[in-house]
Amino acid sequence: MKNKYLIAIFIFSMILTFFGALLKIMHFEFGGITGNLVLTIGMLLEAISLFMIIIKLISSKKVNEFLNK
Image (cartoon, rainbow, N blue to C red; front, side, top):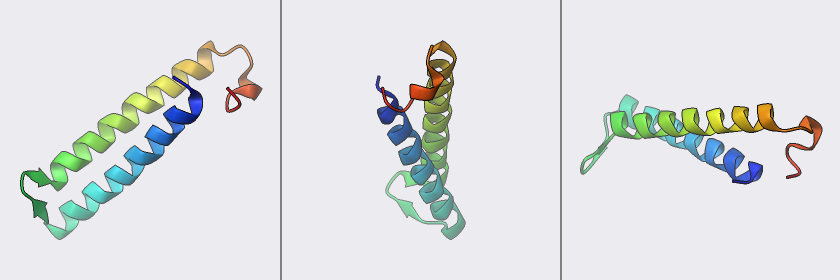
């Protein structure tokens, strides 16, 4: 997977986590979608994408060109 896609997934998951916190604070519920569910999905995506970014950084021979790949 390209690095720019990993960063895009990480940013999307940050937005999802923020939206989940907002849902939880305001006690909104859309069908079965609650703040807890959205927060859980967002945080899991953040952890997975951050783990994959770290693995790519460690295994990359040229760290300076990380974003150019």
